[in-house]
Length: 601
Image (cartoon, rainbow, N blue to C red; front, top):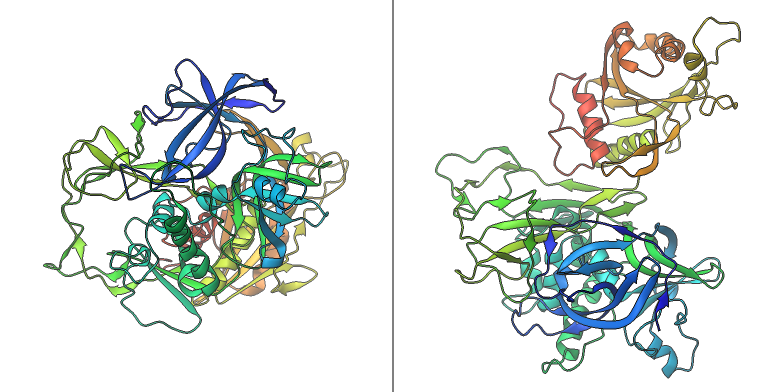
């Protein structure tokens, strides 16, 4: 009997095609549920995951027809639960808004459960079939059951947690699932971490990433290296698969995969609420907070990130390796039935963006004094008709390497707050650069706390001769009361103080690059300035507060009036991003570089 499905789908278009695997004839099918692991009979370098599909009939009706497909582990970010497939291509996906939960990742805040486990223990099922109908009422897939403050529960499939929250790259998940952690020549540990080439230091977690790792993998990998809890859970994944996977391919292996750190956490998910809104069944993870912990120092294998270039005649880095192809617009055929050629070109394929919630972990890029290698000449590489994320091996198979990862972004609380947080993050990471940070108001003076105050604008008198738009500018929601303010931040650098001003923005609806309307805010530039004499600060800020109203927030109109040096700056990411910096941090550094003689890195 068809399922009446009240939830909406939206059309999407992708360049990925999983040729042959997701061709359902004339039917369109929805990826409905992740099941267990299978051994991959054609490519030992990554396992398959069984995905259940249901027939998509119309925007409100899901059919009874069910299909099963074995999908490479690294491709699950493309074949997400809720995506609609026809003729090997993704045509749409469930249109759900994310919901954010505050959770406890300590062992007393969650447990494993499943429909099968609940039935075996004579307990109520995690969720009813009326909420989300599965093929089997005693489904054996493991879920993580989190306790919620309201007394409800959040249920997250273990496989979704693994594919989204264990680092950002598909390569990391492939290695963790495929290879034993250590004590073997070809261990997972040796594939994830390059030799450190410098001594360990107390209070610093140092990680040198292998070539195929992405920078966003480093927080998980730092914990896997230094946190025994994370190490134990990571080792267990491959160990359980080795024990439970069926070499005869007759049944899937269901393994438990836990949250990899302990402590408070935030998780943003898409799915359905139930139990009068108290509980939630998640399908897609949108983002997660970073664990609290030691500062992480990140390096890369054969990195050219050094103060001094390598001298002529030094060894070449990755000489002969084919060029990486980026920004592909043609159809990319993904396969899990073969390993990429060692001399093949590579394509970079992006999974859905992953949002880091809350305060991001402090990560500093390790910078050597002297580079040891020079750039090697790239080889042309052989032609490829399809691409695989498996282990490169052999040649002349016509299979290129698919480098799959989820781009990382950060939760925004509005530009003003984001910029203040970025200044604080840089101060914590780079106390040599920003020696102190404080905010200023006329009443409080300079205060060094994480929560700032704004200087409110002065409203115009009723009889002042200004236009309506100018008269409304000092208010956040005209004609309602509530004055707009501006932040004044003082950053003490090695050669003295610099200041950044950010205006408070009104919320507004804006259109994104796809033409969809979403929540946004006013777009203003910021101002960075330095003064000839510090006693000029108060008069200058009083002048700014008066005149910025007439300029309707266009700060560049006032830069020439500053008794010192002042420049406006944009909040778009600079072309030259500084390694290891978050986007807003790079904007802060870019702004400071406008009023300093020394290049800031």
